[in-house]
Length: 170
Image (cartoon, rainbow, N blue to C red; front, side):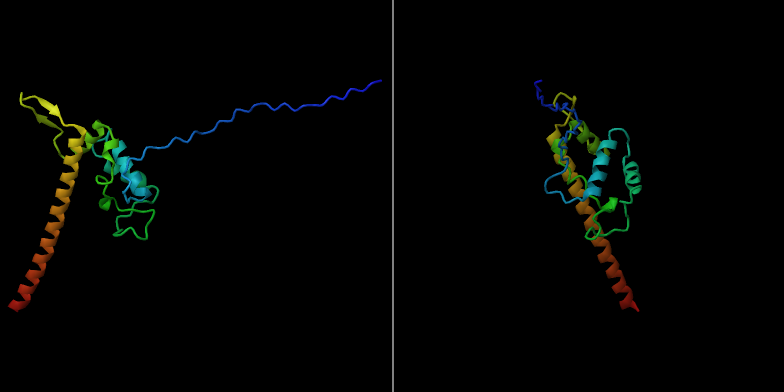
């Protein structure tokens, strides 16, 4: 009797495991942007909801308020890494508007009441190019921001002067 030794070879079945492919999300913000994570979520929400709604602000604030990220009493963001004040969040200057479509930039411009078309020499309406709209958005934002700060400083100066005048009259 001859005994044949047969080795049992383990055949491994090739398991097809579903691996989630980590696609790198396109960063919609500038590299120099100093927005924290909730602020980025808020700004990203604004741009996505703006396509479907006329006023995206209440929807985005409500969605973030559910997760306790919104705090209107915050004056500085030093100690609040996971909360933010929507009224102090500056989305426009932190967006990388070159990565958005022309339609998105036009919607943002319309919301800011900036014209998106112009009359050419033949008196026909033509839409602005994306770069022109981006420049108009940034200059409009900076102009409005400086006039607001100047008017605030004038108001505080005038209040101080009226207080001094009332003291001198007494």
